[in-house]
Length: 277
Image 1 (tube, rainbow, N blue to C red):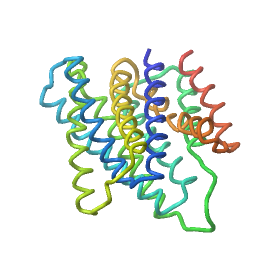
Image 2: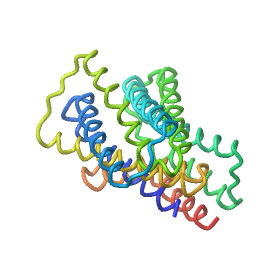
Image 3: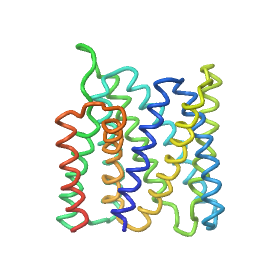
Image 4: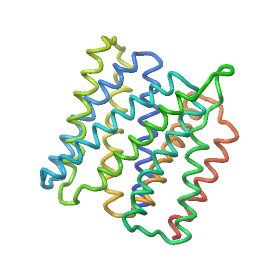
């Protein structure tokens, strides 16, 4: 079940990234992120009330830290993409983001079977291959961009760990706590930068849907880590770029690089090994 939940998490995150990215092509990224986070906050309230649970102080605090780390990592990621090549920034972020919770899980005594462990390795490599895009531009230094990418990966991975530390009795209240922190942070950033927040109707629809998928992905992630090993769930959830790439190919007919095709094939092998193990 944890493998399926991890795959659904990747589907939700990957689809949300595609829709949010599509909206950002025609509107301000800050505006899209702000509306998406607002929608995610409302959806988080619905999840928390619908599924119940006890919002203990410790769980709410962990969720709040996770939400703050997540939205901060998103800012680092955008900064990296703005200053370096996407073909470098995206895979570094994806791999580091999965390695952090894997290391945490192994350090806390999680021991996947040998077959599952090989599958985890395949999934990590696959995530990096799938996230790669054709390099754009000339010979540009990427050292600073790689630093931003590493920070983003550490932020995303640490957010994963804090969510994993919440108790099952807390339901989805940690998700709501996380969104309660993320939304004000984005709002403050929008006010400080004085970014334009106007957008068309179609962009608003995309941003709202992206926000709903984002919070759904977080909820599924929470369920997955409560039912399986963090070291196994993390690399599966990190396969989100596969769905982003697939939707881009299917809907807007963006070409798929050979490395991405290889990554998709390797991801299937990794999933089979993890499920078999």
